[in-house]
Amino acid sequence: MTLFTNKKVRKNIRKLTKKQLFVEYFFKYIIIGIGAAIAAFALEFFLLPNKIIDGGVIGISMMVSKLTKWNLGLVILCINLPFLAYVLTQKNGKLFVANVFYGVSMLAIFINIFTRHNQITEAPLLATVFGGMILGFGVGLILKNGSALDGTEILAIKLSKKIGYSVGEIIMFCNFFIYAAAGTLYGWDSAMYSILTYFVAYKVIDTVLEGVNGSKSALIISDYPKEIGDAIIKNLDISVTYQKGKGGYSGKEKNIIYCVINRLDITAMKKLIKEIDPEAFLVIQDVHEVEGVRIKKK
Image (cartoon, rainbow, N blue to C red; front, side, top):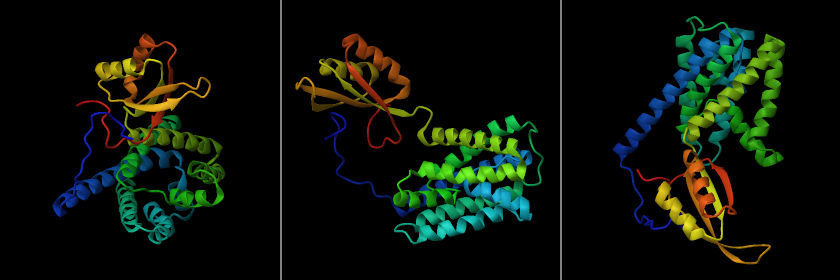
């Protein structure tokens, strides 16, 4: 099944030269370094001075560093090493390990660069919101370019295949104990601010990874599929696919319309559909990644 009509299949796969690969990875590592600098800025200027911690390895490292007075950057690097060692045993894990090691090393360097500077705000709520936003933006840049700062995600992926829980559920389970320890060490107000920081950062990471104008997929079932499809193509400049379906109750053959649409165009699409067929059945779902398809003409 082809996703969109009038689309030519590419027969030749693009092959990158060594120079192109070098340029691609050079800029990728530049962005990872920028992301690490932004994350370190959030930690040193907002979170640490206000006794607010992050989840995962960084949160554990922040508490270990406070108790032992060891260098925070070095602690983060050391705690991540066992997780990196595990990835090395996996197929095609060497490149990812190199990316993560670079990202964590850059984070450690920038933490030490920023460590002697003063905090920006003493208000815990402001530190929570803005620290979480800045941290999420930095981590999002790092994740988007094939690196990471947290080995607990690697552990969660491994455990999810064995115990049947999702990666997110395992990470939240681990963070529960981390934030409980933070409450004991810093006080329960700090623990609650830390949890709020985690959710703010999580939402910003999603925005960075998916984009502000994230895409949605739409499935439309109507007795007027051609009219609706033509209207979407003409008015919204979005390609559609027609799929064959059969009503479970009526037993009638139907053409189902499928398309991927920018979330900003959803309201306009709903209006078009309603004008043509007020009884049309519409399902809209989130799409996390879209590659190799045309959503909108440039």
